[in-house]
Length: 428
Ligand SMILES: NC(=O)c1ccc[n+]([C@@H]2O[C@H](COP(=O)([O-])OP(=O)(O)OC[C@H]3O[C@@H](n4cnc5c(N)ncnc54)[C@H](O)[C@@H]3O)[C@@H](O)[C@H]2O)c1
Image (cartoon, rainbow, N blue to C red; front, top):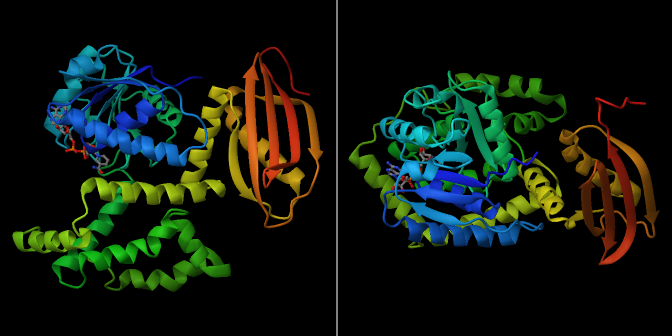
């Protein structure tokens, strides 16, 4: 099912709205954006340039033709005729509610309207809307055009179909839609980040550490690990062979030690603000916002590319998006991998399985034909390229794979599957 909206209406084009504009435009949707700031056009142009640069570096599958961007003069003009609406206005409940009310009157009654809010409750945001059942939160992470995570949740009046449709739109644009079962202040990720942020502010307020020391404490160690796995998996591994129970026994007592001041928050007075700003300026060392954004993006691309080769966490989302893009464009997607000693046949089988996992949502597939040819077995540790191409027509799926060593074909596989119409045909 094609979840790509033909036209997305965006309300607000600041840091987050511009990021959404870039993600949707690059994935082929037209965008109509409303923002009262007269500087919006210039800012959008700059963010879009960064996003094109990032997509060019990261993606190895062709993006569709870029959508068209139109700046409009009212929320109604952005929502009218849109297939999906995303609101990214300042984090003020009254302002958002008024915008959502106006957009809901202009948008088609079934059009999903999502809010980028970092923590306001959807049950409150939908109070003044017409057809409030189609409001949900789609909380992204900056930069929206690179980071896959978006938290999706509904409020008391939201229909389950709304959350599903929003999640499908985000997935189509290459994101990981994390659907939350419960509405909660701050949602999931920001609650976790907030605890770190409060602790960091205390460390500054107490004069214990500087802005730069606190950032180093994260970026040089735990931050790298967080790209691969979250707190629980990390601590499980940290428990060694004895596992998570042992870890809890070992570190459980520290929960009672004064390792955190989270019961309390520091007073954000001028003295604390001044100290923080002065240290932050020193840390930035005169680099401009766009320079720091490029540094952030290029580093994220390096991390995402590495994770993609391991087909894990955010990297797996990128790999899946590339396969979907390549399927749409009818081209092959090539990825690098390292032979693990298990042989070419296993590498090809894994690749077919990865393609099938993605196609599984289209219904059951039955294998009809498989031709595999191994010309040369790669040695363990050897760097390889794997090109895969999937075509899907009239219920027949062809998966063609080519494994190459230093550009020379080492093995090929061709699989033909038929999708099984479970209403008319039986398994076996
Ligand atoms: N910055 C982040 O890291 C981040 C991450 C996730 C979610 N969010 C959320 O995204 C939303 C936007 O945050 P941001 O960081 O982009 O803020 P921002 O200040 O960069 O952008 C807000 C934009 O909204 C515009 N605006 C003001 N009044 C408006 C109105 N009535 N209608 C339409 N637009 C209006 C402003 O001109 C500005 O361009 C907030 O709800 C925020 O909580 C922010």
